Length: 181
Image 1: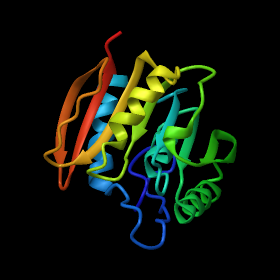
Image 2 (image 1 turned 120 degrees about the vertical axis):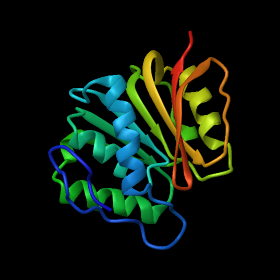
Image 3 (image 1 turned 135 degrees about the horizontal axis):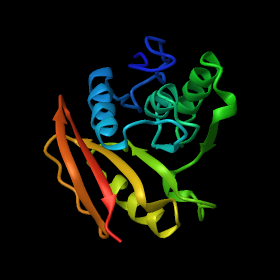
């Protein structure tokens, strides 16, 4: 795995050991960030969350492209070690907050995020549940962009959100969502 674009373009990322984590493929990440750039314009100064973070590749890609800060949330100890190793290798400590635990255990937000990236285990419905809960807790505002990766062929529906676009890449389906009010 490598960073696709930005300040750290081409830098290698460590993946968690074992098979409990399914890292987002470089091609899928490249497609996702292309979809986001066409909507956001730039990542400069954004506050981002990488939930069900795995290796942290999604959040680190956003930071490489200029995001100001990223909150990484992951519960697997091996994945947390990989995230911390990747942050250290990129010398990105000051722009990162790593929290060990479930994305569903986050408390109320101090302020909403600009971008929420979710890559939960496939076929669990955890992404939709997390989006609903995070919206109620103030993490997701009407101005927040939300990306959810599911298995190819999956459809989602989250009350209070509309799907901006959907794209299949390999075994993944990428959903870009916005809050409707």
